[in-house]
Amino acid sequence: QIQLAESGGGLVQPGDSLRVSCAASEGASGTYAMAWFRQGPRTDRFFVAWIDWTGTATYYAPSVKGRFTVSRDNGGNIMYLQMNNLKPEDTAVYYCAASHSDRPAAAPAAYTNWGRGTQVTVSS
View 1 (cartoon, helix red, strand yellow):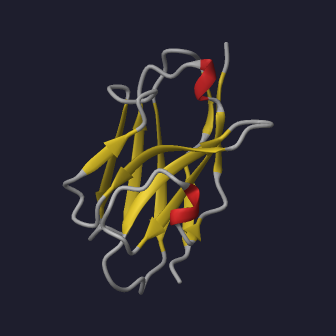
View 2: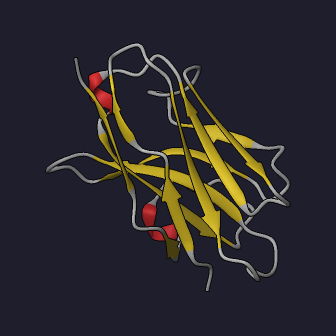
């Protein structure tokens, strides 16, 4: 079981940038891919970005491609999501997830390890 903890959410204005982080528990063993999802009020949880265990392969939802960048650091145990040119429709709770599969997966059901989320609000 991989314990995940998100941080870095907050309130920003449209056009601003924000970086959220996800730290995997020490001792998380094996190779695992990680992903970001988001869930707005009264909506389902939607895929945002995926990164493989090496940190070299990435995959994005069309709605964020070109604005968001996913990366990994610290031996792969910390994942980041750099969000630029934020829009009000980006407002959501952002969750990180991990999977031992090495294939990109956009369905929440493909992940068995989840963090508790961090709120990102984009509003003027």
